[in-house]
Image (tube, rainbow over all chains, first blue to last red; front, top):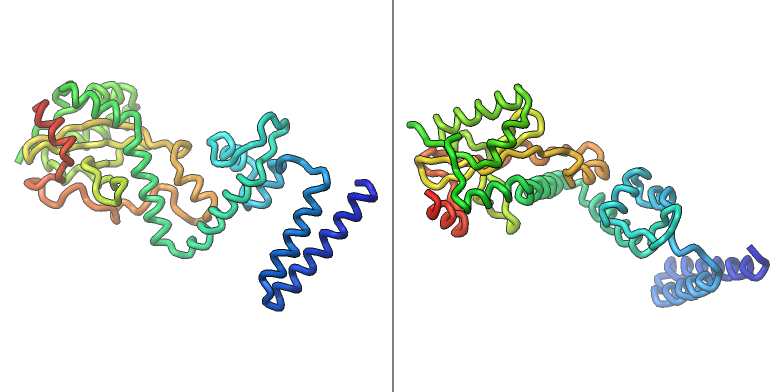
Length: 145
Length: 136
């Protein structure tokens, strides 16, 4: 990092300290303004378009294979053409928020069981085998079992 | 009271792929359906709106499940049998996030029974009723 970039980081840190002090004194408006300044300062420094898989896994609190599986399923979006794979920051934040909500609700086992039950039954309803069976039923293709 | 049990070609083909143990569990379930009707159907699937989907599911050996519908109080249709593999189960992802959570959904005994009286099989939605009425 060059001297100019290092000075920008220092300025951003000062803005973040201002934001913390503003929050502690209950001045939300001043805190938001200071955070915006910090963000703007850091934006000017060259940075990667995405987050490496290992860092994304740490941030989400899941394993690296899980992050890779979610990318494969489209739950997390990778930066196009990145090699090794990097995760889009906005996608990481969005999944992180969803996970946080799930974990907060995690204390409510009834809710979780209902959710798992619903997902389980949804998978059954979407089963290609069941769809095939219903289509055969529609065509009158029935025989003694 | 005996019930007529019918199946689709999907069921016939899937059963042909089963191991001996799995096939025995299918045949036991089929025989029980013939004797007890919907009482042997397992549990009702949940519909998207939270209500009951007009098809029942019963667990067979290993990951196999049997799906049944009931056109009237005399006949049972085995619509499909399928493997419910963990790698395809979104609940596994949730379970990984939330340690201690079972990956097989609500305990089976907590799910709504397919029916409580074989003379009153689970009601079907209009679409499935029409479909079965046209066929049978």
